Image (cartoon, rainbow, N blue to C red; front, top):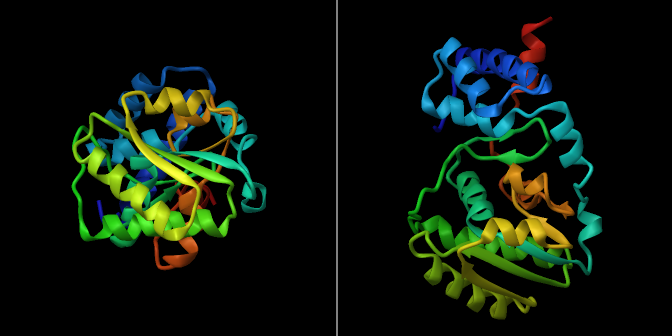
Length: 231
């Protein structure tokens, strides 16, 4: 989804308000999304936007309490959700919009299901990722890629070579249990996956930092459109 009309944004904002209302009252996320999505006749991409961006007040509070600022990253050891962070950076490089979610995290709309397509943006995204880590003066980084996703071994190998070229302490590897490793890590994780953010110790939104180098990226906020519609 490259663009969203103002009319659809208003509908999504209204639908998001309904979903947020249900989540705040303890209703199941999946069934609530289906109910709201059916009511507003949302397509698959629009339902994905709601699923990724709308959260209960308690989840928002829990996630935001773990968020670190750039100054907090100095000398920290970080564990990175490789495909998750790369995909968000590549979305920006392609000129596609991101959504500013209820928990303040930037997310893209795309989904990876077993396949990853290498493009001319892949190498650029990896280099921006490392440029940000070096600027943030981290102590070391490990990047995890899901082994079940195609080309993961190739990308991890390329990442290891790039670490050496930029003089940054780090490693990249493939594994079947990326999510569980991130959730158990006792230091800083970098991901936008809400399931991980709810369980990790602390996190940093790296694409939000990289945004300074891709300033034309469109950022969508359903809350802003929801507030406008109620005035």
